[in-house]
Image 1 (cartoon, one colour):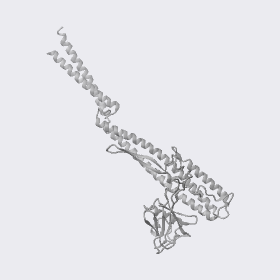
Image 2: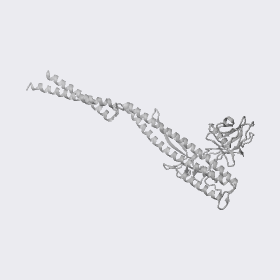
Image 3: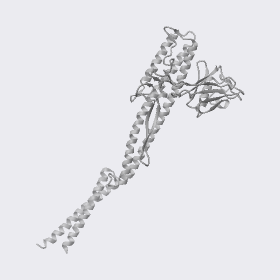
Image 4: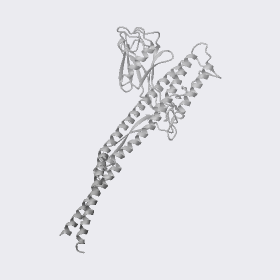
Length: 441
């Protein structure tokens, strides 16, 4: 009977020791890995969810890298555009100088040629990751009119993965195109019949109300009066043409239909002109009409005092390829010359047309900078969002699988103590059995 009791005690001690050892192994693993669910056998559901989230985070990390490369490409293109814009302003200044009597146009032409070379060099060197968005060749097999930057990754409840993109319209922002096939689309340009001379008086009820109509979007009215001009002028009775131009473009930006589609400038003669922008490969849809809206208390800004509309239409591209903004057409910003060795100087009318050409290019290149700036803002915002999303995913994974290391460390010490006691108990039980057996010797 005593022998049976001692054997039973030994078996109980052995069972207790095995249980303690199993718990000790589990706790040791949690302390060493920092996870309470390190494989599927620990908790199949939690392990599956955590694995999926980790996979998503790896994809988000790749998307973040793509955004980093895309942001770099946009930065380089934007820096190139701003540098070219400075060169264009310098060219406009040189052309205006050459229009003055007594100026040696051959020397000015030397400066203009240098500016043209600088602009092309800037565009040609604006390369990032093997891509150049400012100087292209649309007839090349690897040319793409649109470049996509992967900006987002998502997985729906069915497990389907989708990606979102930031699209860069290369065809709309390129400054040069090496392709010589085809002709580009042209914008629609409406020019006032007369130049603005001196200052304008918009006091009291005096106004200039314009109806601006595009092929799509209907007729939009812009009213210039004492109220709308107040924020743009110093003296409402002496409004300069530059103040007037600023107010008109501000009104265009504030109109959702016209914003990004029409731009107002002054030509070399000081005439107000409206031009469609962003016509892409199709110019036919870029029809533009400008008319006075009222015949009461009208301030003549070059469009007269009647409601007769001035209309212009763009043209489509041919041959499937278009030139860039600066090498567009037979006479372009890139090729204009005010003096040649064989023919001498151009006349003043041609000079003024060159100034108009540069003014138009400045407006278009400014629009390119705006587009790139908007894309940059979108990419940077997406990068910030991905950072936040990845951190949230990491916290979610931690909630599911991470162990409380402090708690597990305390538990480990307790189990180690229990193990020692269990070993001692088993040793005592085994010794008691030996003592009982010795009585029968």
